[in-house]
Image 1 (cartoon, one colour):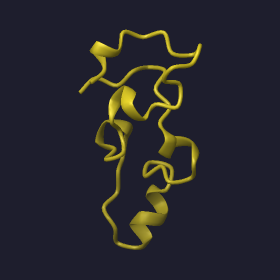
Image 2: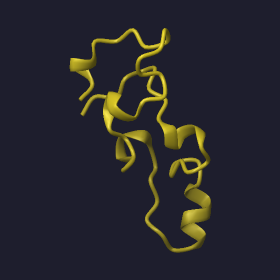
Image 3: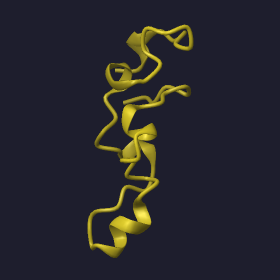
Image 4: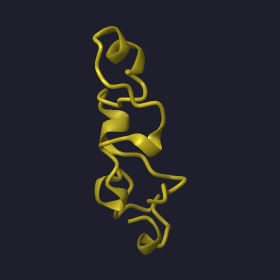
Length: 64
């Protein structure tokens, strides 16, 4: 799956980003997500905060 360069998922901004919380997850012996390509929350355009706004200008068929 290809990641859109402008992708901003809901989990990226609501405090539940597993990459941002990697240190906390490691302390709790939970699986650690090291980068956005491994993120279980990434669903392409479907969960992008920019979908259907003026900030989204990508061909959605490329990022599914």
